[in-house]
Length: 307
View 1 (cartoon, rainbow, N blue to C red):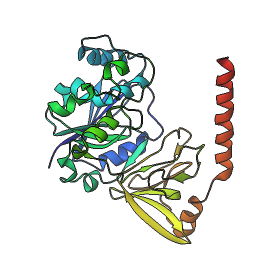
View 2: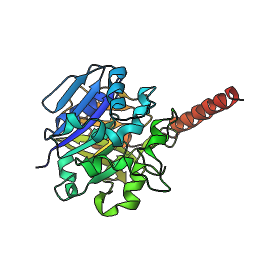
View 3: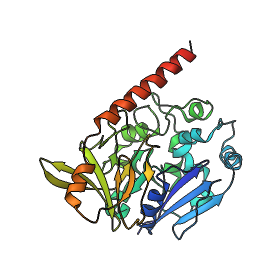
């Protein structure tokens, strides 16, 4: 079995989804998760924690380059994600694959989806919420390769602006892998990127097309659930990503079997199960309208401030 480590430089307050993330990470003992952090992350058998300040981590990043980088706030770290294999080589040299991701997600059975056939590739998934890369010099330095029409890493690393260097659809690293080295890529999407509240407060899978869904996590498996013409349907998922959902609340008492719903994380119901699941899958149109209105007000305030 090829070894995997997923890297999380994280500084500041952990997201509300962290307990859920941790519970699902612990259910994947053959995958290691490595933190560089100043917050309270408890180590575990597969969770490695390097305690340090943001300024200390910045020194590690700066030490990897012979020019002055810009890393003025933790959020700017997203630009450096595809360089972690190069920057943190001494920390990950004993792993076959390294990766990066977000903490506002819940994992399913990682190894069920990322099989040996998938791990034949060098670049896997490619999204900011989860990407794996083969740990070799060619892969770890590919972010440096200049190709006309794609972002140059020096430009991304020397501006305070967010250039989305790590993401698709911005002529960054993921686009460069997909377009220039397709045979080295595995870019399937057996995961669910959930709608932002202003798009739909009720969950919709933006990439797989299911609407009015919730998620069930049980026995190291993650299922997307919906009711289709009155019939309950389930689709297994590698992970689900809950972007822009800081309003979620954690009400779980038993993380061995729980649900993720738009309002937060809750225990799986013990009675009237079908009735409750159907209710939890309902459309939240009023809350969607609220978040659309709120985002519009924030946008107007920002525009007026910059006049």
